[in-house]
Image (tube, rainbow, N blue to C red; front, side):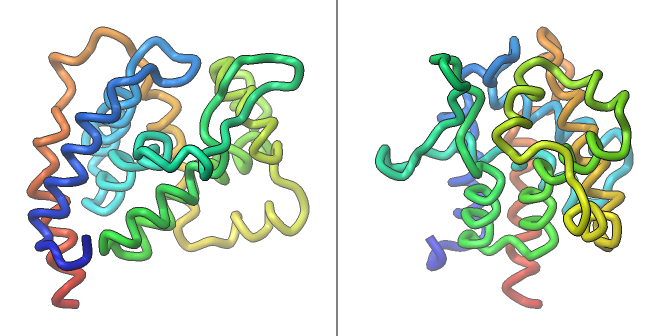
Length: 202
């Protein structure tokens, strides 16, 4: 993949979103693709910088990209067949994007969206109440609310505010029936390609 041009890598990524993102977004009433598109649009409407828009679009790529079956572990509730996602999808996504040439900021933002949920549930009790049932269930497998050193480390991270913003856009990106007013994945193709090209000349 590294031998491909930025445009080719961007095309591959957008095509992967379109092809593999049609499945149900776990526990929600929209597809994985629509969830990602809504998150990116939320970032865009908020005037976020380009890297943050890209991270919002790709924050769940670790849930979407196909993995070898022996490498895939899903979070199943105790005594239940219910599935609430791919274990470590935030790290899977971050590593995948790093391999494609995205810069550390985008990769950290993608990896942070689970940590941001753990942070927000630690500092804002009403935030937990606002989470969907599926998001509350996945929190159990993600370590629960931050405490102690983990909480302090997140507080001091220079990207804290953007990581929190991304998490809130993520949470709000679960609205069914707004496909016509949500930009499609291909509308981000040039933005992604420009980002990847900039990393090669940096």
